[in-house]
Image 1 (cartoon, rainbow, N blue to C red):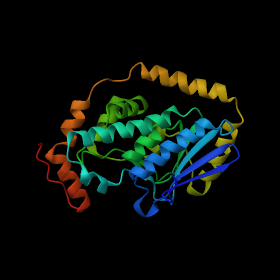
Image 2 (image 1 turned 45 degrees about the vertical axis):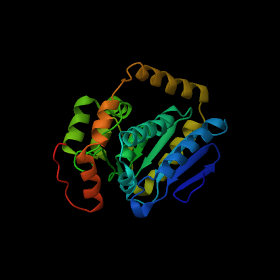
Image 3 (image 1 turned 120 degrees about the horizontal axis):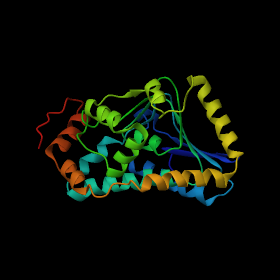
Image 4 (image 1 turned 180 degrees about the horizontal axis):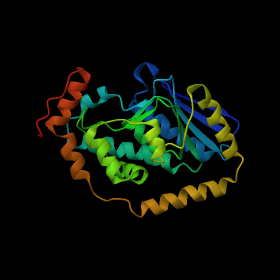
Amino acid sequence: MESDEVLVSRDGPILTLTFNRPEARNAMTWGMYERLYEACEEVDQDDSIRVMVLRGAGDKAFVAGTDISQFKAFKTPEDGLAYERGNERRSGRLALVRKPVIAQIQGYAVGGGFGIVAACDLRIATPDARFGVPIARTLGNCLSMESYARFMDLLGPSRLKELIFTARLMPAEEAHQAGFVHEILPPDEIETRVRQLAEQIADYAPITLWVTKEAIRRIQEQRKPTGGEDLVVTTYTSADFHEGVSAFLEKRKPRWTGR
């Protein structure tokens, strides 16, 4: 699948994928998510690709979530379940890529964008980068159990609860102190640094890099949660979720009822 909304380029051993909807802060459509999945497949099928880099077009956002207009079609319990399963299929696939994946983050990486960068191996950001899942303030939806687990591994349960409960966005420096972001670079230096880092890693032993990724993934997998579909169904079939979507698209404050 080729689309102007996702650009894939190759330079030697490095494949770069650019989310290319800068006018919408690179908010993800279903097609963009699918192209990301396909790119992961391509990376794993080509032994000459040693590193994958993800970035967002423009300087406002890496990915500012999922395109909210798509949620208007949600009517049944299966809609929410299919969405969260799809999210895990894509983010889980990104986490399974056999090569190191670097996220080059400028601006917002929130909602679905936060999930994408969390599935990457290294995160390099500019000072204006912001991270979080402000779902309690915006849509009133939830995450999959796998997403909660991934965020908790990276941030810890206390910080994750605080971020979601307050719906605040974590600035780059805090994310760096938390170990989530590995380096912070000025906007005019980040591309050069990511390229340098990718070239450095591409020169190292690929089996060592993959085994390290896989070993850590297996350790985390042993703690993987089960169940949780009832929580997803409760959320996506609630009146509050539909109110949240409508309010977001109508640019007004949601009227939560707890139903």
